[in-house]
Image (cartoon, rainbow, N blue to C red; front, side):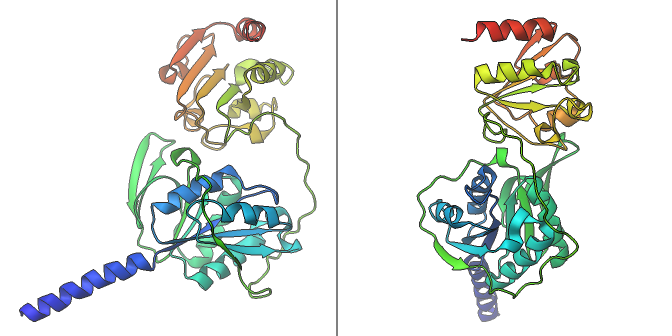
Length: 336
């Protein structure tokens, strides 16, 4: 009896140790073929909480500089490189089979990426190919199989335990610090050429990008956002001028985007970008729950609205009840 208990105990301990040792994470790098995106550095910090080896898949057309950058990031064990014209445009239909083949090759227990437009398109496809349920917008990692995420537009926090053999995750960048340099990862080819099925039905044609010298919303320390109260695209020039004076990124509410005042890549909220700057200035934004989900983690929130009962004032650290068409030009004039 005693001998059987000892053997059973040894087996359980051994399986736990081996399970920890065999833990491995595959991170999907997001980049522009020149520089690593900030969200991937946040994902690398999250991966450290999972334990085990961390491999980063870098796929693109000319990725030499990105690969070198990733090898120097702290915590990276190895960089898996996939370079070719088929990855132009980072089409999810092409990348998903590559991710699947790479996961199988290194036997990764977790597939992880920072929460972004690209990962929201790619990771569900990967999860479907693996026949698992993706866990999105993770804000904390309790253990390799237990994760915390927000639900109901951030009004409730859910802790869940995933029983899937392979966990597919996206992590909210505002919840994890960006990983710093200091690593020395090795470089390998992701998978042999032709060893995965290329996507079909989609073809990359071209893209038109707006040139913007302002800080990126994901990394900006100050964000100035305009809402429906700005009233027109022409009036948004005030928001741009104020942001330029403050060295800030520019965002918008969904109402402003839907009205055509600004392009949708500026949208902040539940269906847009999630930001957490040092200062968030909301101008002419009522503060609908969907918008608050994208910015309520900001360190300091200030709001300008002529309606004293606007919901935005319930979360704002500083509030100014005033006509924005008088207040904003005065702020622009006073800022040197």
